[in-house]
Image (cartoon, rainbow, N blue to C red; front, side, top):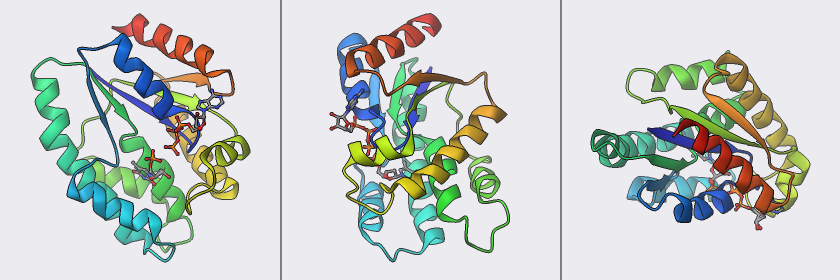
Length: 193
Ligand SMILES: Nc1ncnc2c1ncn2[C@@H]1O[C@H](COP(=O)(O)OP(=O)(O)OP(=O)(O)O)[C@@H](O)[C@H]1O
Ligand SMILES: Cc1cn([C@H]2C[C@H](O)[C@@H](COP(=O)(O)O)O2)c(=O)[nH]c1=O
């Protein structure tokens, strides 16, 4: 089973992901961007304020393709539970927002369309729901993505994804104290495992 954790920067995904390692020690824990050289290229792009948004999309997508073939598909073939801190929805929501002012009519649909022939959808996506202002504050506003105006667009894209496939998503109130967020996430996971 493939479970993804999604949400705005600062929503608390990594905090939850780290804690889940104690709860599910047998699971495969992974993340996007990855730590491969494709992920390194993505990190360079995140730090580049003048990165071309389309080039950046394809860097993230290359990292995802490598992640799928090297980590995700082999783990699922072995019957493992895989828990990923960010996955394809991050691309739909974030690059959907970055490309909003481009010549592409519907960037979210476009980004989905380039994934559709090769990706593997998560079985469950836990969305940590938080408002963009709190998200930006918590994340420290250290890069171009961690700005509340941009995160507002990202949030709208996530909402569109949730509305399109409500059965795949569960939403957890990420404004709660960390302990309660973790309890809610564990409850949701235990219900499906
Ligand atoms: N429920 C919470 N309440 C208050 N602060 C929190 C909560 N969860 C996490 N934090 C704090 O917010 C900051 C960001 O948390 P974390 O790195 O887990 O978020 P994230 O969603 O993984 O962010 P990013 O996507 O930017 O990596 C950290 O300082 C963390 O301690
Ligand atoms: C996977 C992915 C990530 N992003 C953005 C979101 C964050 O601002 C950074 C790095 O992620 P992290 O969780 O803070 O390590 O990259 C993105 O725009 N598109 C993606 O596909």
